[in-house]
Each structure stands twice: as C-alpha cells, then as structure tokens.
Length: 124
Length: 124
Image (cartoon, rainbow over all chains, first blue to last red; front, side, top):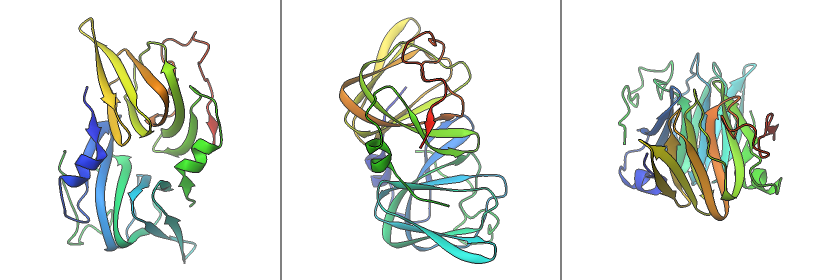
C-alpha cells in the first residue's frame, strides 16, 4: 500500500483537459485534471461522474428538459453528473479537479471526435 | 444537480467514527467521517476502500504476510486499501476524511460486533 499526494499528482503535469489516473478501485478510477476554459458538451451513457474541486472554481453546465442550467463549484465543493445527462465543464481560469467515475470512462463521452479526447489516460 | 460543500458536510455533525454519505454514484458511496484515535482492525472481503485526508493526519495500519505495516497520510494524501486486507485507521488528533467505496460497505467490515459499527450511514 502506498500514499499518493494530490499536490504532487497535480505538479507532475501541466496539460489542461488531460486527466491522469491517481487511484483504481472497485472498477472505478480516481483522476486528477487541470481544467481551463470551456470543454465540449457531452454525456456518458452508462457512467455517473463526480467532480470535486481541489483548487479554483468550476461551473458544470448541464441540459435538463431542453434547458441549460448550471452548478457552481468552489474549492471543496463536489457534484455528480448522472449518466446520460449532457454536460459541459467550464473553468474561468485554471481549476484543479478530482474525478470519480467508472474505469474506461472517456473524458469527452459521446463527443469523442473532439481533439481533446484522451483514450487511455496516464496512470500516475 | 446540486453542489455539496465538504466543509458544510463536516460541520453538520460532531460524532467520530460515524461516516455520512455525501454522494452516491455507480453503486459507490462517497462518505465523510471524523476519525480520532485507533479504530478496530477489520477487512472488507469484496470492497477496496479509498481514504483521502481533507484535514489532519491519518495512519492506516495494515497486515501483510503477518506483519503490520502502515501508510502515513497528511492532508491532501490518499491511499487505497485493497479488498481483503486487514487494516486499522489511527488518527492522532481528529482527522477529517473522505471515503470512496461500494455502497453498503460497513465501516467495521468483518469486525461488525464492534460498538462503532454503523449499519446504515446517514445520507446528508
């Protein structure tokens, strides 16, 4: 068993929209990602996705009944995007974010023609 | 969709060794717990368990090949206890900890005759 420092994990890369895996358990992955700006609208058909903001701030826009709504997250806040819900993370300045989701969940979901798609995230 | 503040979650209760559920996703639970002192040795036959220290410090003792070893976690550190591994969290002073594990995982695992067993954690 080993200890993983989230600060060290974030310090190990600079790229935004490029999640790294920091822990794997129960067929789930815990990932760290640097987010900056607006991502692509997408959904994950079979995967709920948790966003936890470690540093910075994040808006998670989502579509419900055709309308766009949003959840605002400050550092220390989390939200869960249910499977199938179209969403788009938007960071005004860089945000350091922890993700919990099933192993194999694609960052761009069903919008996997986006250039920011990461098919096989690096395991730190 | 809603935002959950971890600080508010921790502020909503004082009891130690009494995890609360802050998020449910993909048949997993994210829990917050205040730990203080030494817990009971136990294992979870079918569940890996993640500990992430939000505030304070935590030692996770575990048994491997008959020997006791330990992982030391400061705030911002995480570790995963694999299914079946006997372990005992020990906090020198109060630690605020986030847990990520399958829904239904008992805090005392196979040591469920311990008085600190919480059969049905409260959902915040």
